[in-house]
Length: 129
Image (cartoon, rainbow, N blue to C red; front, top):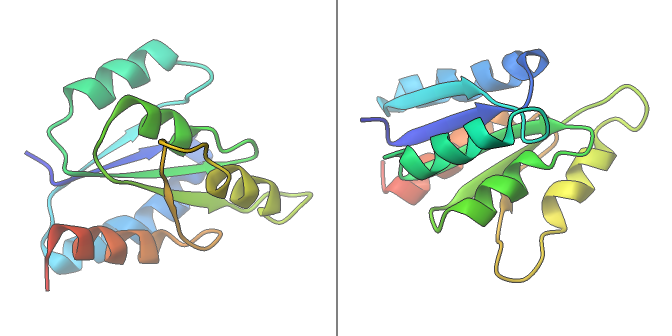
């Protein structure tokens, strides 16, 4: 049973996910890594989130970066959003999408491309020293 679920919106986000994976491995935290687009496969995402035993979700997405907010709308567990840098705006578009969640749908946000800090934050949420 993974303590952390890492979801990327696209396979192109794998380099950022690997940063998180490396840190989680250092902590000895079990994780599950999935590529599920909030836009292209919403039913699969819904099933995954609702069926997951993970205690914390790390959601990695660029451009519209809808993934963290969509996941947060489907669970009461902590969600950490990792905005991914883009070609035109350097990740500012994704950053603003992740931090501008409506009341009642909280998402913690780390730096653009900040996979490492997402994993460190997950470890703190889990109480891992």
